[in-house]
Image 1 (cartoon, helix red, strand yellow):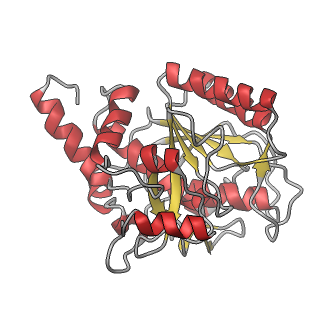
Image 2 (cartoon, helix red, strand yellow; image 1 turned 30 degrees about the vertical axis):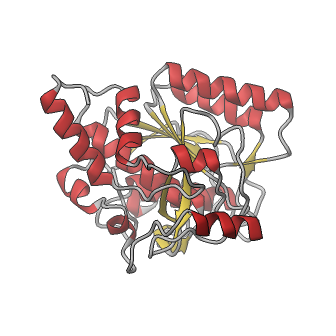
Image 3 (cartoon, rainbow, N blue to C red; image 1 turned 90 degrees about the vertical axis):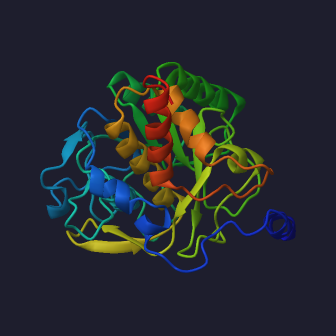
Length: 310
C-alpha cells in the first residue's frame, strides 16, 4: 500500500478540482446531446443477467437474453446496474449513455451469490468463451466487468489472451474494468495491448482506494466515475453503486456514441484516436480521466482533413 501511494503521488494530480456529476466529469453531456447512439453499434455486455422487464429498459434494443435473472442475486444486480448505465431510457435515473445502441447480453456470472457478497467473478476459460461468442454474434464493442477466479492457470490465461487477440483481429474494441483489489500490477486482461482498462475515480476525479492501478493500465487505460453512481436496480427502481465495473461502461458508452457519429471509422483508428487524445508525456500508474467530447472533436477534425480517416 505504501508503494502504491508513493507511485500515485509521484504521478502528480490528474483530477478535476471540484466535484462533478458522473457524465459531466468525463465530458459526456455534450456528446449525449448530439446522439443516442445507432442500432448498428452492438455492445457485448459480458456480465450478469439483466432484469429486462425493468421500466427503465422500455424501448431498449436488447439481444441475447440467455440465462435466468434472480432479482436477489449479485449477478443480476450487477448486470442490471451496468446495463442501465449503457442503454436505459434517458428519462430514467441511470446515466443512460447510449440507449440507441444495441446491447448483446451475455451472462457469465453465477446466480448463486447474494448482493452482499463480493463482485461476481468468472474463470478465464468462461470469459474467453464469452468473448468469442459475442464477436461471432456481431458485437463491435465489448464491456468486461469480471474479476478472475480462481487464480488463473497458464492454460486459462492463454485461452483468454487468444480470445482477446481474436477480438482485435476482428476489429472489436474491448473495454475492461481494472478490478477492485487495490493492487498495483496487471492481469491477462489489463496488460493485453488491445484492451482499454478502466479504473474508478471519485466525483473530484481522484482514484478511489480500491481501484487497481499499474503501468500497463496507466499507459493504455482510462479513468471514469466509480463512486456514488446511480443506475437501475432489480427491484424496478434505482440504486447506487461504485467500483471499476461501474466505471467501465462510461468508457464503453462514450466510444459507442463517437462510433455512432462516425460509423465509417474502423476500430483500430477509433482506438488509436482514444489513445492519442489521452496521451501523456510522462508514464504513470494512474490513467487519465476520460474526455468523451475530446475524442469526438479529434476524429471530426482529422476526418475532415484526411478523407475520412483520423
